[in-house]
Image (tube, rainbow, N blue to C red; front, side):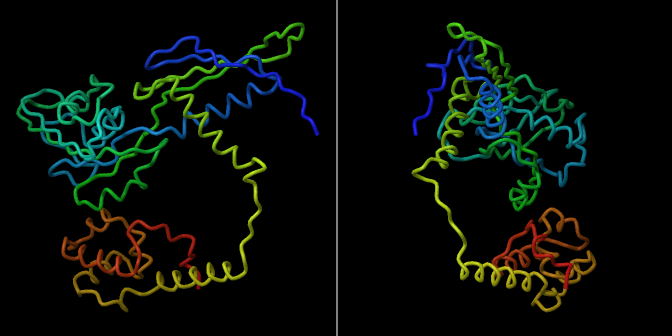
Length: 329
């Protein structure tokens, strides 16, 4: 069965572009294809392109984000909010993803100061003020910079808190600041019901708008290829696989419901957990290390003991145990 040819653009026209802003034109398109293509590209651009961002912060003497620092105007939560806005561009293949910033005899800590302590990244908004402070303050900040996609809340960056003293940060990885598209009528010969699609892309400068558009299109193509005749298959779970899943689920549920009193814990660690109403292994592993460090009389020795216990059971802290319905009998 033959398919009637679609009216399609023979190229994408870049009407204007610099490192931060690009305007692209697609024409002619069949009616309705402007919104189909424009919306898909916009969603991918905003959610799926990779970038670099701060995922954890360590400031000597600061245990949590609600602290304040003597001689510094902003409290720690404000400092973290400002650090989230720092934009990074990878400029070398240096593997180390930690930056230790130490500023003395200054009235401000700016994003540009961060760039003085790393050769791996270029700071794209160096004028951003992180905090204001007295000149007598020796401001030291250790940052973890990671690569990711879109937006990742602090709860999903908790792995960084396993290094004691680090505070997890909501990470804004996306290099795209804004995407808009508009659709206009255009003419092909005598027909005037074709469409002209305009896509307006603003980036933070870590990626050129043209490269961003190409990257988003590539992601869409990779996904749509799954629906081609060559790759489309129908796969069903075999009965024995279903049984395996059920057995694994029941085993994990039973393990998580194990009372801590039945485990070989030291008296100090057990009493700390009991006073915090942590009764079962499931109660324990759904905690983050930062939460436990706030328990009364809970120290590094108890933490080391519990880390070993959890590891031996094949578990980890910060687990989502809701799917095991531990509250049910």
